[in-house]
Length: 121
Length: 125
Image 1 (spheres, chains in turn red, green):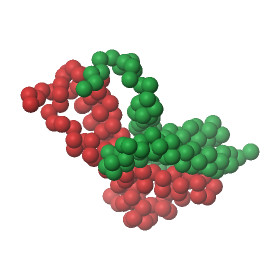
Image 2 (cartoon, chains in turn blue, red; image 1 turned 90 degrees about the horizontal axis):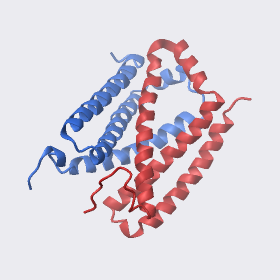
Image 3 (spheres, rainbow over the protein chains, first blue to last red; image 1 turned 135 degrees about the vertical axis):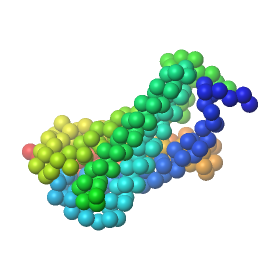
Image 4 (cartoon, chains in turn yellow, cyan; image 1 turned 180 degrees about the vertical axis):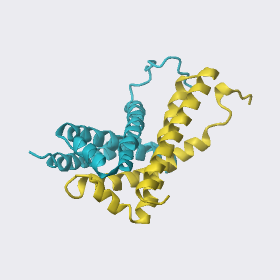
């Protein structure tokens, strides 16, 4: 099969598969996240409460896992949508760069929050 | 293979699964945008207790509680329709995909109602 950038260099099978794997992880983590933050207790999120939770390395590990899976799933999904509608090579390159920059920046900001507040650095 | 030529080419959308697909996309885009806002807001933790607590009390106002109810709905649709996608793709559920959709959305609706009740009960009068 002749491949060009318009058809994308690969079949997209890996992205398709990982989108479903990350979906299963996110489903579990997001339900847990929403229940613990919003449904248990008064519904108020305070600095003291977050810092107390972040004393646990397990909590931080889960937050880290949550961060990478959510960003991967969100931006892999965004890219999948873009691929469906944008076919021009130049536009694809520009948008891919934008999506990657945004995703990596968000990952960095999230990581910074985690490290700074948990005093891991 | 179906060749999509226009973004608004919706001629094949007389099927419930197609609508689920469209809403799944739109809710996915909305949730990715929300993720951006969420990471940005949570980052105010690094600016100390005073700033973070001020931001949190602002976001705890009734307006944001109502928006949270909407967010919960978007999350539940995306999560439960996503569960259907995974079941159809990985566990050969395509023969029962419509039943799955209605069944899972019923569970999602019940969770939405219960969760919204809790969220709205947090509004301080």
